Image (cartoon, rainbow, N blue to C red; front, side, top):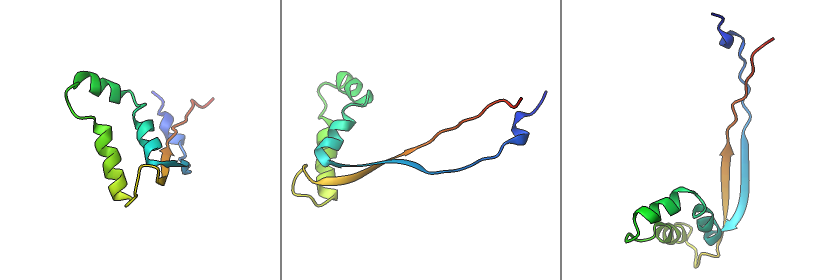
Length: 85
């Protein structure tokens, strides 16, 4: 059996999405994750975790409100490969 990994060369470049948004916009973005409505559906009597996150972000950024603009970044990871001819 041929080992296709003998020829590999890894090239690493950093890919990042960077955006400025308000704390409220960021929390609203978190609410779009599929885990959030699933959690809320399974825990209808529990406090909304996003309210706590928003409050903690306001405190951590020493902001006066959730309209404070923050820098957000998402690292992007790609693994590409192919079988040599």
